[in-house]
Image (cartoon, rainbow, N blue to C red; front, side, top):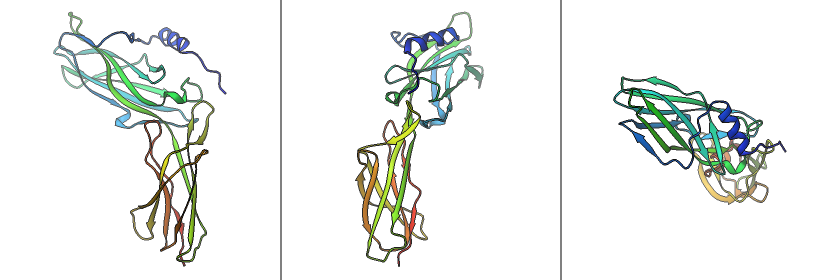
Length: 254
């Protein structure tokens, strides 16, 4: 088990590094006509983090003010006191009044204090300063939202191969997901998973049945052999874990 730092220590380190952390007690507020018009995280995709691989993603906040945008601060907040911060935000003007301010965040489960219970819905808190002498600004909590998810894996094996038409095909596999706290993948238990089949020479899978992963994430079911084709398991995903499809396993029917 990796040594874990405390939230207090993290906040102290971020502050020392120059990050601006707006107190959670602050309510949304603004001065002047500054507005936030758009927030995009990771190109609109969920942030999926594996067990041992660093993930870098970009957060962009677009804002407008009659006198233009001077700068911004961006903080990301998630479940169980999760927090990602940065001291480097770059603003690029699209016009005299509108700019998009972007920051890059890197999360590495090998070194960053991120725990499994921090997977789920995260929010973007943004502070935007406008140009001019009147110090116009806007501070908005939950200006945008996104998902931080534990990467998933799904396997499948169909047997026997080949099989006589009308006989039983046994399909096994495993659904697992990243554990950020020990750097391994563990079975994802009690999850609904579809058994699907694609006839040889076609491109579309159809669902045969839905089963549930067991206490170790294992999957096992049977079906009747009809024609040559591919069997796979398909997982729709949850708020904390992305969808996954196993690579189809071909079975020759004789």
